[in-house]
Length: 145
Ligand code: AMP
Image (cartoon, rainbow, N blue to C red; front, top):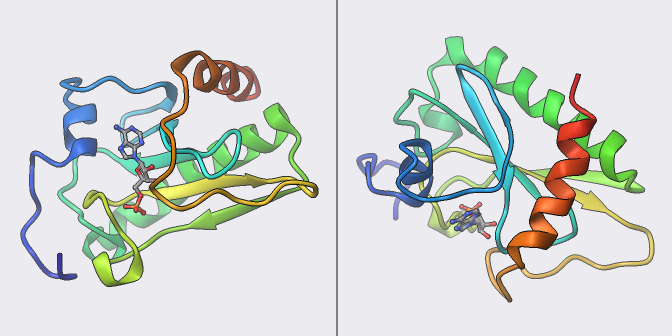
């Protein structure tokens, strides 16, 4: 997938937004949705996606949506930090397959970093068990304002 292909309305995250596919939800408002990554690189790996846009990547996001979207990303980041108490937080966002992007609806990754644990592979490895993801989501949700 190049940086500039057309938005595919059947990408996984579009299906999650239309509730055609499940997700372990953490946060939702009118403009953003956050849910657990099913192939987490670390415990508590959370994704934040903008709603009501056909943005494949950061370049596509209308500039008047950047502020509200990044506020949601920060809100969820703070809740991940408070809820899970990691030693650090990694924010990533890939644009185009060449950069490592595998799902073509804009998203930021919030990946907790723990001193004694390395990161698992990006977008691979084993799918996490739903009850484990739900346990992390519950702690993050409880930390939201
Ligand atoms: P990227 O490679 O930056 O496009 O990230 C896509 C992310 O979505 C990866 O970290 C995947 O593990 C994750 N992912 C793929 N399918 C799902 C799904 N159905 N629910 C939640 N996360 C997913």
